[in-house]
Image 1 (spheres, rainbow over the protein chains, first blue to last red):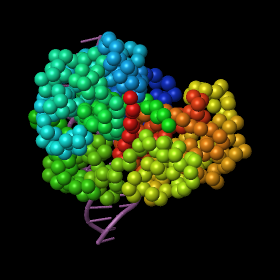
Image 2 (tube, each protein chain N blue to C red):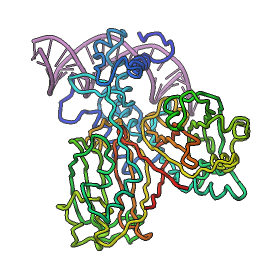
Image 3 (cartoon, rainbow over the protein chains, first blue to last red):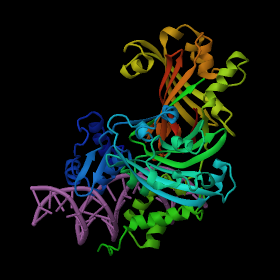
Image 4 (tube, rainbow over the protein chains, first blue to last red):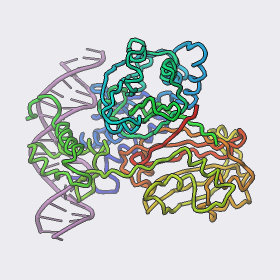
Length: 260
Length: 260
DNA sequence: CAGTGGTCTAGACCACGCT
DNA sequence: GCGTGGTCTAGACCACTGT
């Protein structure tokens, strides 16, 4: 009953054909794919075979599938650039008026990403081993944990979990969530405490999102994320550590300039 | 016939249970998962349901599946760090003896990645629009295209396609593939032509690999890749552009330090 | 040869969005 | 209420790996 074993599996042939239509633009961004039933008829295969093909394309990030509404060609998002100079700009602003909202997030927003909202969640936690190492303190040292979800135009753009030494910020305006978003961002914030950040280290990795992250960022669970572990240092001493900044991989580009 | 619609789908429950066993270490790296038939019996479901669960885990990069040999917990690879100072080190070496093989690739190799081999493929191509913009030349300008596949211990670690202005390198040793790998790497290479690279720009993105890249890098096609577009500048003038450096996302970390 | 995953079929019921 | 994708069943043949 199984059809002739010509060469490549049927479901792969179907996926190949659809992929070609997408990449050549015959199926433009946003266009609906044929329904499963249509594909069954066109190719003369069972539904499972069609679904296998579609799930391949979904895993490649080429399409999205919405329940009851079919699969559509995934539109390309404008790519948001996160430049290195975002930190330098903030530094420059530190001495002048902290006008506008220039967190390291909002600074990055190019065209079209000017308005934004935050979810904030501040708690106090003891340092675990990894955080202790990053911040060069003993495990158990009390930290202020700040969990942010940045959104612009309602679209989630970044998840970040950042840690500050509680002894450094306790009782200051920095420890008060009500003051977020803080004009000038993290670095301006620390400057009000007399801490001058002079070096930022970013460790960049990629991985697939957890189901939770995919939901929060509004991406398919087949779109990879960029993660950054960021350490801010003042005079060689770590003062802030963001262990897991999570960015949607389909619309972010990190831009680094290295002077030799 | 369909079983009770309690809440989460059966295939998801199965995946969740297996995922938990993996992350807690009950199923350690390299351990085999139960076979499909075993899972069918243990959960009392059809094979399709079991396969759905397994394909979920595969998409998350937690397991690999080999034909006729079952699924196994994917071992964690040592993470290779690509630090910013790799370029600075090369600069320092330029004036001294170019001892050893210190390309920007080999410099990055920490413990265990000392021996390596190259695939090289040099051709001459005209600049397209993107390359023209990166190198600040007109489209159509002749370029030397160098395609490398770096391997260490037989394991592919990096694919890169790099472009140099043909007018700059034509007839020089740099244009001769036989001279690769070049001691000291790209920057040392350009130095022999009197070109002093003083700035490197890297644009980092992530995406899923093409089937081709997955095969070349020896990763599953569900492991994301990091891509870098790198421009080297000398006195503000771009002298080299690498449009698509592709790195396996499961074993690479990019490390940037930003001085303010 | 037994057992594995790869592929495929031909049905089924469901919840939900749309018209 | 019709059509969609989501989920599931119960079979089947295949190629290849191991013993």
